[in-house]
Image: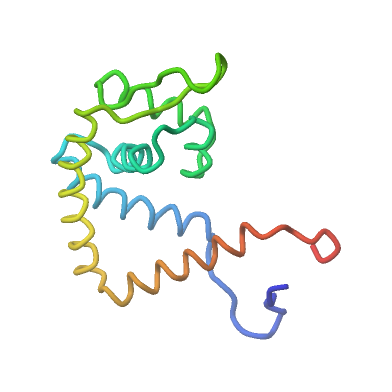
Length: 156
């Protein structure tokens, strides 16, 4: 069980956590999208191409789980990349399943975007500070682990 702050222990967080996280996420996304955009992709599209490359052939459901998104969002995000010829959705193991794979042009686009992503990451690390970015990553990982823990109904 994680420690809960009790009234009077110390000043707790100020403001809405959701708003603050969205604010940070928007600013970081703007930074990455600005630089990765030079390759003709949004950061979310680069991430999707990267996940498919790592997991292929990937079932859409498995891909959604790996990317922590719902199936309908994944489908919406896949469609433009399929239309551009960077991804293919083909038959799976049986008549009901499908697999997503990266095409050769998708590999080339991902490689181009990877160079821009690296440039964006280094610029972010430089601007924010590598030590601060490392702490941010560790804190995010720690929070995700806590949030993903099963909730004990008796203590909630």
